[in-house]
Image (cartoon, rainbow, N blue to C red; front, side, top):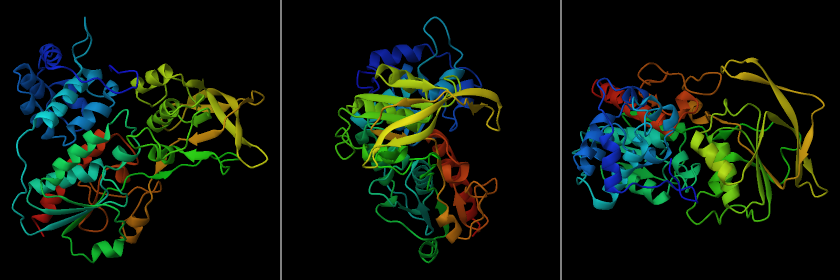
Length: 435
């Protein structure tokens, strides 16, 4: 991925987009399409670019992915479409994400087909959670003439797109523009509106979709995790999610920060800390670089930003000063054993290898889980990990209540959530035609 010094993705000029598109051989039964969770017709949209019809190219994408610009910016293409591109030499794979980003932003800048609200069919759908799954389902259901209301507890719609992906990766004006397009289809989004199961059921919706995501962070299980100066990864990113450089968040100039974890949230937190002026940003990960789940380009950017990596290391305890503030973190070296249930080698701490890092802040980013209180209040059966039990159509144990996104899968990518939202909308439409 081409990036500026600030990490913001480069947008192609039309001539570069046409050149890169011309390299696509438009494979029959294209492997890139199979690798895309939403099954975007990649050869078809690229063919439109070759012809210079950039708006039509974006419309092809939007048939499967309403957030075409967002996914062009944040999709982990290295393990999805681009990884499976048949073109490898001499210029490498076709940069599908760059081309998608180009046509999506081209349409935002130049305008596309006018959207209008379909004629309501008399049935109403309530959706809880304005993240990528909920909003994608809302857009699909609006196209099918349902009156859709989306309830969002936070002040801004977008879910993790708005609150956990930093602005350097996803400029908020682009996200808001694509959400505004969804609103133009007649979808009503009510922000600052948390709901309870009983309240939701009393409003007479013909079907309900729960897409509340995974906002419950997994806590660092080490002594000192409750000290002043210890934050959760999502908490830190949310405080720094505004376009103004994170003025609402902690002031990091001259601070030393340690981030624990190796996923996208951890990498985003480490890069954000470096960009917000941290004197030193450390990232502590218990496995190897090869097993690190974060997007490869983000790992590279973190290195460029000066993040110091401590690989095959695990926190043992967080150290405190007399005022019970963080003053350091003690870690252990780790060796890798046999694969665990995730398929990755199990980290085993090596006793006697302790070392300390002097830091003022520790950010735990080891994963999130589902807050299933709403599911339980609706009487929906859940799995041991808190996610909702559902059938192949996304319908839960309570008839007419469906789930999509992280609340059913336990955590995935934006494009996976979009794909699930679109799929469950199709099944909800089939259900609603029978009731």
